Length: 442
Ligand SMILES: [Zn+2]
Image (cartoon, rainbow, N blue to C red; front, side, top):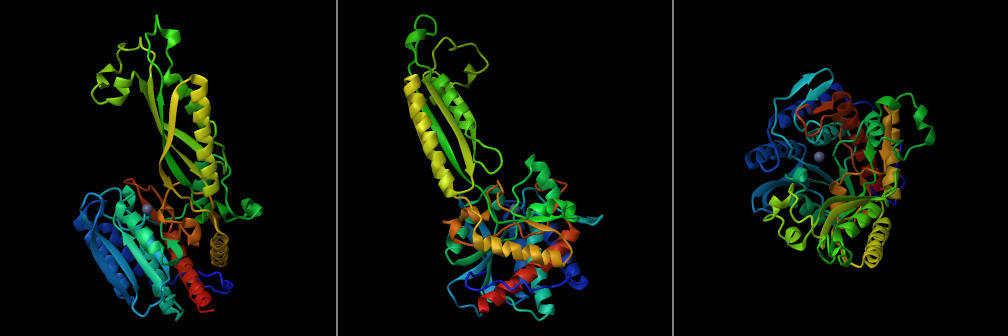
């Protein structure tokens, strides 16, 4: 996925051959039959071993290494690359092996495979194996600098996922994420408004759009923040006018902060937690929980409040501007209410802005899908955090996310992968890999 060369859109793998589809499905059944919820070391090891074996059989050099997570528990992390690759940059493919729930036995029914992790995201991992088989069967080129990392703790926003992305991201000339795309129908429904799709305006009239799918080139970043307010306590009767309510000041700040949210592509601010009262109560909440649901201390003007929340935005500049506005709002509110307000950022997760090279690759993907008779669109404003957000600087790496097959029921007992989508995505991924191999060779 380089910028230096034009992308060759002649690449056309055709539909996935029956044989490749069935071997991919059979691998997916085996992978999902192994229970590998986050933290289950033996299960994760067995699933990693099975996937590692599949990669080895396709000539990749595989390394599965136990690595300590934040709690010090060793969990397996899989890395793979071609033995003959010696450069210092690579095409990084990422996925995770952990699931939210322990596995139920997989079953195929009605064009779907019902299984734990079928779509999130063992389906995407299986697709890569299918794509490699398809390329080999057709004698096509495969990028020699392809490198793969599979982590064991993505579903718990794990330490090892962040560590892998930080380290491996430095070497990545491009990042492809095998997390699931989304059915277009579902996307429109969940957004409540017309979604911001980076597609031509006439796509609404596209006949295949109703069972179209997406991939992702942009994801929001977020900040988590805290506001600490100190006022002056007083007797709510005799001393009412001498008191300065931290609660009232923090409430007004919260309402105004939330009102900075804008629908569509705008940023959102979510005050997520609010504690206020007499300082002793707020600062030792655990010890004084018995005050809640009682009338005690309501005769005090509350002198302490803390609000904790987050904000999401599409570009780094937007994020910075938002931080400034929230800070300014704190300065204004503290003056108005004559209280002390301290606004602080707890953590910053950078956004994945839709980059032009990513968009170009998305256009190629859309074209490949069209040639195979299905409709694909690119999402530029996915709101959840994923692998690309874990890079030190997501805006420096062209990224295609949501390359995996679509389905439904993620994180539930009703999880399934749509087998038609599995079929589509094998061929799509193969086409993209081949185009990448050709463009890197120049
Ligand atoms: Zn996932």
